[in-house]
Image 1 (cartoon, one colour):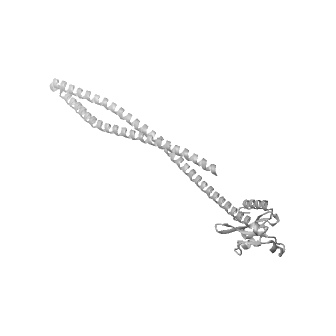
Image 2 (cartoon, one colour):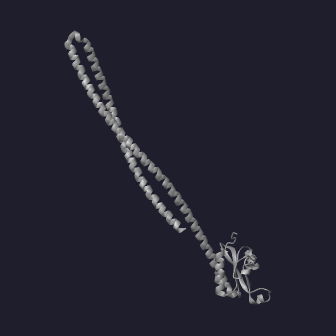
Image 3 (cartoon, rainbow, N blue to C red):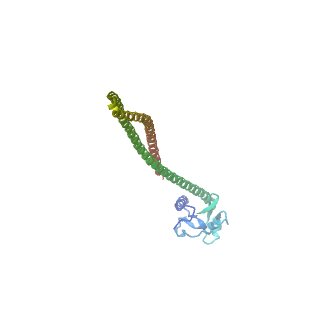
Amino acid sequence: MSWEHEIPKDLAERIVVLLHDITGNNVNIMGNNGEIIATNQLERLGTIHEGAKKIMNGEAQSIAITSEQASRLQGVRPGFNGPIYHNNRVIGCIGITGEPKDVQPLQKLAAVIVKDEIEKQKNYERREQSIRQLATRVEESTQSIQKISQESHKIVKQNKELEKIALDNESHIMNINKILTLIQNVVDQTNLLGLNAAIEAARAGAEGRGFSVVAQEIRKLSLHSGESLEGIYPLLETMKKSMATITENVKNNAKTTQEQNELLQEIKDGMIEIQNQVQALL
């Protein structure tokens, strides 16, 4: 069964024990509708105190009964019943038997203690709620950083793969250069061969005309091949420079990403430490 009163049960019981030990008198604490929620008279627990009910309903500010007044009333004891205020509202009552002039100061002091204890408990609850909210936010931030860190690891891996591809391409271009150098040598030798063939055809005179045509074609092939090579070399050089730039950029990106990843790891470790400290406060 849920507690429907604004005064905590354990607090009400502690105040009853404290006042009863000090005075030796009967002490009652009432909650909503004047219901007795704590008392040293256990048989009255849960019953309605009519005087407290009037105070709770605003029909009276307090009720004081002297010994003289009690002597004229059947079954009534002298005592003082006063309100407990919190946030300018009556949230309960404290009643103590005895002469009002003697017990009223104690009742008022106890009401202030109850008010302060309730405020402390509410402040504690607000603080605990704030800490829980902070813990939740820290946990969410830690998870976000974890995801970013994981993605950063993927980027580092991809950068390394790109760097390898770029280096492989540079190596391929170097190999192509070697092959083109061999082709250039073949072109030079072909050109020399065509020149020698033309010389021999000229020596042969009319009989060497057919051979002269072949020599001319060989020289044309050599010339065209040489011109093609001259066009390929600048393209390869441009590709080589581009690949070198790409490789350098990939290396720089990999370095930056790695540094960011290390920084994220430091932040993550710090967030986990904060999270542990916050959890320790709960």
